[in-house]
Every structure is written in C-alpha cells, then in structure tokens.
Image 1 (spheres, rainbow, N blue to C red):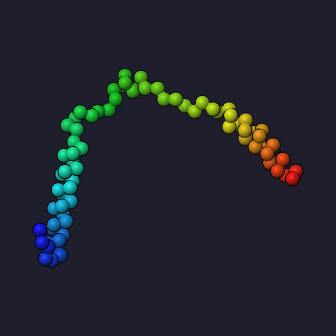
Image 2 (cartoon, helix red, strand yellow; image 1 turned 135 degrees about the vertical axis):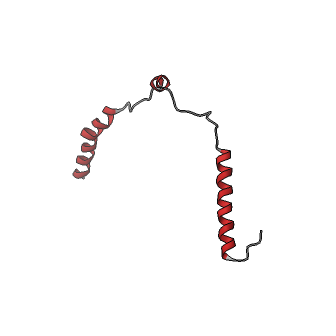
Image 3 (cartoon, helix red, strand yellow; image 1 turned 45 degrees about the vertical axis):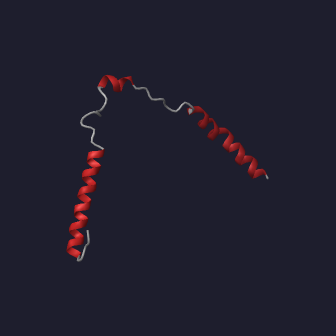
Length: 74
C-alpha cells in the first residue's frame, strides 16, 4: 500500500494495529483449555521455605563482629 498523506498513514497504522491484535488473540486463544487450579489441586501443592534461618543469624551475631574486631586491631 502506498501512503500519500498523513490521514491515510493514520488510518493505515490503525488498521495494522487491529490486524496485529487480532493475530495475537488468535494465536494465544486457548478456547477454555487452560483454567486455574481447583481447591484440591491447590492444597496438594507444597512449596519449600527457606531452610537456613539460623545460619544467617549466627553469622550476623558472631562472625561478622569478629571480623570487624580483627579489622580494627590492624
């Protein structure tokens, strides 16, 4: 398509946006195949938490300060 003025360019860009959006919707349309988890499925999922809670506390209360004390003695 040959665009000769600004009005045609604006119309052309609007049409292209609509075409891209329609193509995107068509491409990503799942027709109801994807759905959320049921309560039973959700409750079955187990997620792990952080397992090293005490290591960081011990480091910040002990070794970090020991390092600072050694640094100040130099």
